[in-house]
Every structure is written in structure tokens, then in C-alpha cells.
Image 1 (cartoon, rainbow, N blue to C red):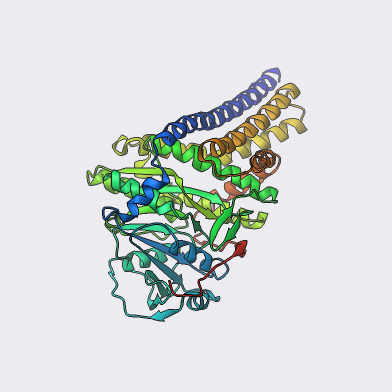
Image 2 (image 1 turned 45 degrees about the horizontal axis):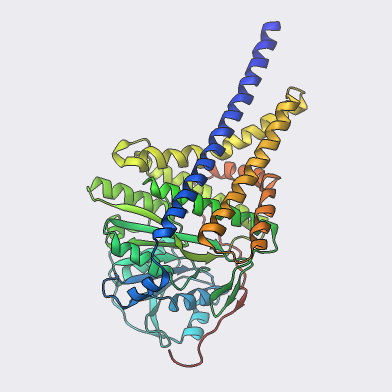
Amino acid sequence: MILSLLTIANTLLAFQVLILIAFLIINGGYTYITFFAFRHLRESSDTAPDLDRLLALTRSANLRPITIAIPAYNEQLTLVDTVLAATQINYPRYEIVVVNDGSTDGTLERLTEAFRLVPIDRPERREIETAPIRGVYVSERYPQLWVVDKENGGKADALNAGLNYSRYPLFCAIDADSILDPDALLRMGHQFLINRELVAAGGSVRVLNGCEVVGSRVRKIRSPKSILANIQIAEYLRGFMAGRVTLGEYGSLLIISGAFGIFRKDLLFSVGGYRKTVGEDMDIVLRLHRHCVDQKIHYKVYFIPEPVCWTQVPGNFPSLLRQRNRWQRALVDSIWYNRTMLFNPRYGRAGTLGMPFFLFIELFGPLIEFVGYVGFALFFIFHMLNPVFALLFFIISILWGMWLNAAAVLLDNFVIHKYESLLDSYRIALLASLEYLGYRQVLAVERLVATFQVTQTHWGHPDRKTIQGRSALPDHEP
């Protein structure tokens, strides 16, 4: 009897120690990533070309032309602003291909009215099979704007249709609720000009909620009133300013956000285009890694923090849970489909560092968190929890999490200089600290459930809101 009690006590103690070790590894890893990113961003900001020099490139014939593809399904609330922002970018030669993926609302009608679309015959490079095309339109206002109307086939299918109709060697994919900064493509195109091994690059994605948009441009960058949105701002800053900067520098960047990324089009065709999955953005990058290694192509995949794309984040918890459920299913599916890379030194740091990071930290992280929460609750109920240990663990986890959020905001404020008001930065850092008081726990449970729903392929549709501010379509011909 005594031996059994000792065994149980030792098991419980070992469990608490394992949870503590996992906690230290995860948060210690994020701390290292934050420090590394801060040092790199400070160094790179000193050598980055200024905007005047970049604008001079608009007169250069060396910048490779870009096709901007915008897949859209039932996006009548935001798509006009997204397209109008894309027509105002600083870049010498580009086209915009909007793919209306069988929308059942007024998406096509809004586009037709706003941009004076007229039907036209345009040849299709049909290298990738897609759902049937119903028609192609060109804008009388903006000759570089095309709209492909097709039957519904999903986001990957819409992107493949955009590939088939694209004319230029670089392919930029953005979401239908995204607002590009005017110099975003210029900063990305400059990288493809100076680095011929670059095959894919992602830019920063920022939270649009709370910002003031005038003329389809972000004029005032503000923190939103919503606590939920402020927490997501901190998450985005951690993910992009810290996580992707570090993974990119270590040659292990495995995801480029579907909201804003640029790829070499020839390689997209070489891998067969986008695969039908709920996580086409991560999957396409993993398959590019595999293809380049297998074909012995010298390549690089970069994250470039200065180019910015603004996007809406969920404004309510049900929409947020649907989004994070899909993200988790996408992660599981992408890792499983490309599992040959996992721990495989053939694929360099992408296989030995990037894949294990996403497997153990991102995929298994929710399980570790959930087991820890349940274990602590059970220990407390049955009076098996050391109260001093529990209190210290709780205090340290909250303070450490608050520090990580504050550090992410500092990265943005002192390096990238996006939020104009220090009060907004303080507000984000303060409200984001509430992430560890319920928000994170609920998301951990949702992501854990999603891990076992990977066979579900529904994409879902986010709750959109009209972009704050007003559009400014010209009264005269451009």
C-alpha cells in the first residue's frame, strides 16, 4: 500500500516536472526567437534601401513584372477596396487578376459597377485543371485589371485559375480583404532583383481592425477598441516580426501567408500549382522546398518584414475559433502530406529545424497545454498540488507571456515604426496580456479538437465587415 502511494506520488511529481520542462522549452524558444529577431531587424534596418531609392527602381526595366492574383468567394463587402488599393501600388509593370470563385452574392456585380468591366476573350495557359471558366472581363478604368469568373472550386482552385491566366514571371497571391501598402510590391520585387536564388518571399501581414482607410489606403494606424482584436495584433507581431524573421534567417521558413506572398511562377507550375487543402499557403511552400532540393535547384525562401499587407481579423469568438480550427487542420495536413521532409537532413534546415519546430511546438503545443491544464485542475481537486509550485508557475507564465507580447510590440515600435502613437502600442501590450486569462486556454482546446478533424476539408467563410473609411474611385479616367 505504501509502495503504491509512493509510486503515485512520484508519478505526479514527474508529471509536474515534465509540464514545467515543456513550458520552459516552448517559452524559452520564443524568447530566443524574439531576441534573435530584434538583433536582426536592427541590423537589417541600417542596410535596407530607403524609399526614394526604391521609387527610382520604378523607372528600371530590370524589375520583373508581377501578376497579383486575388481569389474571391462572396467578398462583396471588401473586394472593391482591395482591388482599388492594388491599382495604386508603385511598380513599373504589373497586372491584377481577380478570380471570382462562383460567388453567390453581389461580388461580380460590385466589381462590374466599380471598375466598368466588359467581357473579353483572353487566352488561357491551361497547364493546371480547374473548375470551368464562365467568362473573362477587363476593366475600362484600369486596363491592367482582369476578372476571371469561374464555377466554385475552392481557394486553391481559384489560385490555379489565376496562374493559368497570368502573364508575368512573378506571381503574387493576396486575400480579398487585404490592403497592400503602396510600396509593398516594390520592396518585394527589389529582393527578387538582387537575389536570383529567391523563389518565394512573404511580407508582413498587419491587423486592419481599428485603422482608418481613406481612398483604399491605410491613412491612420490605430489599435482597435476590441480586446479580442488587440490580442490578435500581439499574436501577429509575434508570429511575423519574431517567428518568421528568425525562421527565414535560419533557412527554415515553411509558410508564407496566403494574405501576401510572391512566388516564381515557373516553379509553381513545376510543382503542379496549389493543392486542394485547407492550408494551401503552407503546403505550397513545403512542396517548393521539396521540389528545389529534389531537382538540385539552389534556392532561398525569405521573409521580408518591411512590405506590409493589412487584413481583417475575426471580431468575435465564434469566427476566431473557426479560423484557428482551420489553421490547425491545415498544419496537420501539410506536415502529413510532406512528412518525407521531417528530420530528413536531405532537406537541410527546413527538414531538421523547421519541420520539427512546427511539429512539436505548433502541432503538439495545444495537446501539451491541454494536458497541463487538466492535470493541474485534477491535482488541485484532489489536493495533490503543491500550492507554492502552482502559484509560482501561474505567476511566471503570466509574466513571461506578458513580456513576450510587450517585446513583440517593441519590435514593431522601435524597428518598423508602424504604430504612430505610443499610447496605441501601450494599449496593445496591456490588453494582449489578457491572452493568458482564458483566451489562450479556449484556443488550445479548439486546436486540440481540430487536430482530430483533419479529414474535414471545409474552408468556411470568415465574417467580413466593410472596411472602415471610404473608397475613392476616380470620377475621371485614369
